[in-house]
Image 1 (cartoon, rainbow, N blue to C red):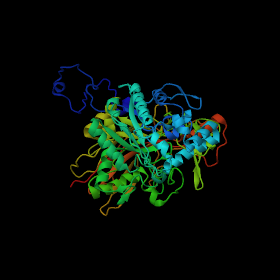
Image 2 (image 1 turned 45 degrees about the vertical axis):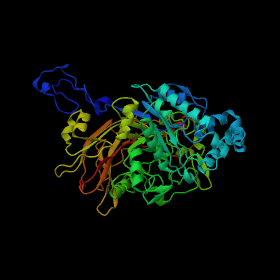
Image 3 (image 1 turned 135 degrees about the horizontal axis):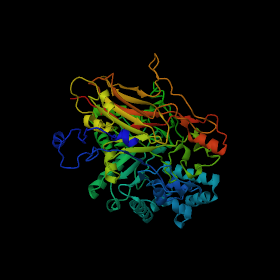
Image 4 (image 1 turned 135 degrees about the vertical axis):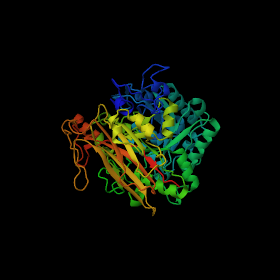
Length: 640
């Protein structure tokens, strides 16, 4: 069904012939064929189905993952992503409902390889007083192990790790190089072009003052190029937390190896507003022409949703958006030593960043925040689980158990992240022409991706100037979309005439998931005075609902049974299709558009835990939600 709607269509008993460029050949027009006489699928040059994957996952090789008890190495992570059953670090058998198509394994570079040596009690670790203290806590297990793990993370985020350990697990040290080779060769063993793509990658772990400025890096290449360099670190004296250092590494890697690499900004909602700077200065540097050019060049993708919260929108920034208050984590940093401020939020959320990018483009001629949307787990269990009923948590300490909902993820004097606020999210869908490193990487570069909080919702989003309702009568939507417009991630073609841009949108429910509530288009724009605006439009919805006098669409309803953690698909729609034209278009204003697709309400993972284990949940725990998908934007830039 997904193939039918979103890539091509089944054509029965019709003489029509479709070609990738939308026009019949001369031979076809004359009724003669040099090749087989009829196949509308031959010579297709555009992506035909979304490929699902995770851009952010950690194994026991990462400092924090191993300290929390993860013992699974890259081989187990790759096997799990490919659909095999493995035994988790807590001793539970686990398997995905459906395998992934691709993945990027992104172990932290700082102190790479330290955690396995800590677990093994290697002499190099025990010789340092802090290393010995952490080892004893780890071996004691339970609360002592958790305390040791958070002490490691705290020392890392505050830049107070023991110097001898930094020297032993930094670039130039044998342990660091050995670990990088392990990562690279594991990806190569599991890469299976055409069936499953295993990307070589890492996480650059910048945390100045505890503010999360992490980036995940994905290489297009294999081991011949990847092993010519070791990844950069952020802890001084070997590294630096300024993103320009990462950009320099990426430039050097490409220049000296002939390879290709890109970076993904980590979900920004624990960055204290530093993820999307706009002022003249930011941590370590200046927002100037060099900064915007480098960020635009190296960061074509943003992790909009993951385990530590959803980062699309925030109700403070988008008070007119009734769906903006979704899984927000809005304190200053992971240590909770900084609390939320109004100024902070503008530099953390995707929609606001897209708007701020319009301002920077007007100032510098380059938009540094012109990114595609994606989701990731950021799981530290080696298990890429984003399914609500199969969620294995952020770390080993919160793998399935009767009490995990009650365990705070982080506690401090200023507050805590309660266990029930963790999110079973998310995945990235890529419109790639084939399942290979080259094709998927190239799709990221052109931003033809979309984010999901977990469900494998099918989503096509094309922008153009002359789509019509007649285009919905065909099931050849991809042919129409690519022929008459541009796909998600692109720029609208030059405007001809005096019309407004319109959008061909198709959404299909996850085949084993919930029906769809609605499709919305989010528009952001900059007016003549430089002020930034946004508006959310309901453009397609289910169940023959009628907007009220206030223009608001009634809620779809809720069929969730809280006693059984189940729901009915007797509300909502299996697919939603529309052509929508911007009713408020001003050709003089820079703008962007993206689609948001909402499912009907379904159970959150905490409700599944309650039903399975009989757990008494905190009163404030949210039991249901509306999962969603976000397309990458399409941009409009005025002529001249």
